[in-house]
Image (cartoon, rainbow, N blue to C red; front, side):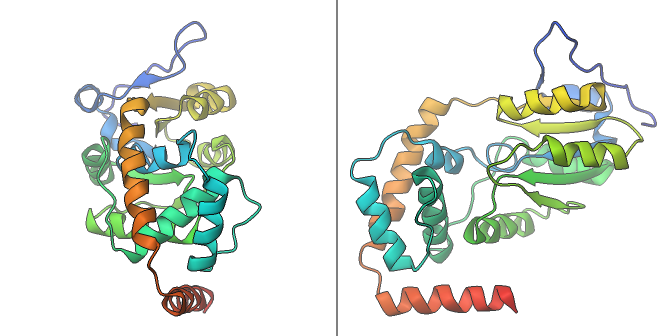
Length: 239
């Protein structure tokens, strides 16, 4: 890590992360390193991730069943929060609703100029990925790779990158402390785990309003239009 202050990773008796502080990171010369960013809550606003984490929705089984039928997405059998996420993302894609920027976006733009960036995200549904790529293009991010690892630990992918890129530690930006802990257990001083902190309870209210808006917009959808849009897009994806 040329011309950089080598970061001191958290020790065994401290918190397993460093608080996100772009001014301090810049002063330490970290921007020229290798940076791995989570997407939701890091590069983008946290509110869409909170849609997945809403604790209770009355009559959700019936709501999800109706939306699956209308949108022609056969996600039955998956956990309700994940079905909710998939259907919400599909609706937002069709409505052309953009994803809002998050706290680490400008720092990521700087680190891609000075160093190299990767994105490691749990977004793996078709619509969620499509919307994320629109966001990446809009904000002119240029990651070396994007890893979509839905509903599994991220540490395995980080371990692979660490073995391949041995010119310094990997700066890993994440808003889920469990992912940071798992990464630090696996990689130790090969990684610098950086926590993006949020206020989930406040964002849950926004998430519920966003979800209500998306789902209520869907009730009048034309069945033929829904089927045609879904089938055509997936045919293009498979071509």
